[in-house]
Image (cartoon, rainbow, N blue to C red; front, side, top):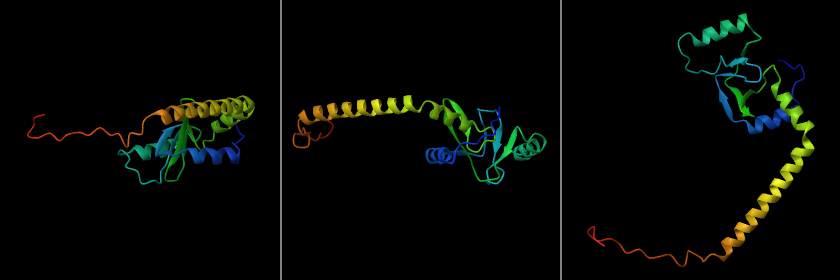
Amino acid sequence: MSDKTEPSDDFLEAFRECCDTGTCHITCEMCKRTHFSSMGGYDWEPGELEKLLANAEKEPDKYFDHGSDTVWFDVIDGKQVVLYCPCNGLRRIEQFIIANRELITTFLQIRFESLKDRMADEAAIAEKLPDRSRSRRRVRPVKNGSN
């Protein structure tokens, strides 16, 4: 499945900022297209890169040579999503976020407040604990393996 509408520049920038996973060979699980990097200087198995290049020549809709040093991807909702995949799977994810932005924003606000409250509770408990830096238990050294 391919969508001609690409993700927005804003979404691509956010994805690039959060994505720190790269490889030389991966399948986009949004469309099952095989992505690879022919110019990364990777240690390929004998004939592996040549086979990928031949497949890309025969079936360009199924094999995509990024021609760069790395194919960047991340896992979203349990699926490997490849940056710049022609299927534009990232656009569908962006559309989902935009369509559900009120729910997502409200949830995140509630979640942050809840975490902030829990942290305040934990800090109040920690304040009541004795200062361990002054009351450290002294340990006597063991001599000759005896107590």
